[in-house]
Each structure stands twice: as C-alpha cells, then as structure tokens.
Amino acid sequence: MLIKTNSRFIGEADTRIIKGEKRKVELLNDFAFIDKKGFEWFAPKGSIIDGSSIPFWLWTITGCSPFVGYHRLASIPHDVYCKTREVPHKNVHKMYFEACLLNGMNKIKATAFYNGLKIGAPRW
Image 1: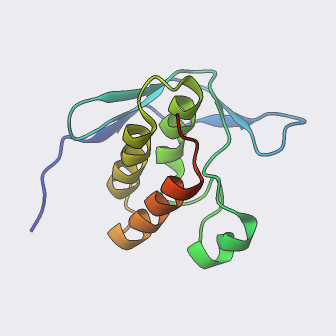
Image 2: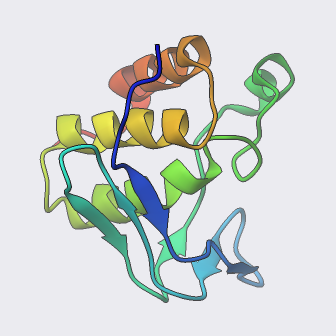
C-alpha cells in the first residue's frame, strides 16, 4: 500500500568543505524539508553542517558516513535545529527520521538511526 505524503525537499544541498575544520561544511544555498504536517524545516544559506554523527566504527556496518547515504539530506535541517533549538528536540529527531524515509532509506535502517538519535543526540 502506497502512503501519500506531501513531504518534500526544497532546494539543492550544495555544500563546500571549510578549510581547517574537521568534518564541517557550509551550505551554499537555502534548503528545506517540508514534513508530512506541512512544517518547513528551513536551513539558510551559510549554515554550518557537520553531517550525521555516525561513529567511525559504524560506517562499514551501516554503509554510511557523515555525508554519504540516505540520511544526508535529513542531516542538514537536523544540524540547524540542533543549534538553534527553536523546536523541541523530540520533534527535530522525528523530522530526521521522516526525512530519511522520504530520501529512500528503508524503515528498519531509519528506525535504527532514529534510535541512535534518541540515545546520543542533543536534548534541550
């Protein structure tokens, strides 16, 4: 059964590596994720992103590194909202899960990533 959703990404996730910084990139244009409820998770041009915080030892197991994989687009607004703390952390982490699914991650892996956020991601 196909579930209809209005979720979508807006803009391109173009970034550039910041020289001298370990695992940080700058967003080169505005980017957003619209969730199934219609909330716009906006990441403005110039935002500094560090990708998904996947421990190095899990890269081979998950098939993902911080900037590579179906989680990449989800990590952009997630990083922004973890810094601004404009929205409760539980909502921010749920958005990441939904964005991973929209970008093609299977539900089992998305659930594992979401559970990782519940354990190790910032809370406020």
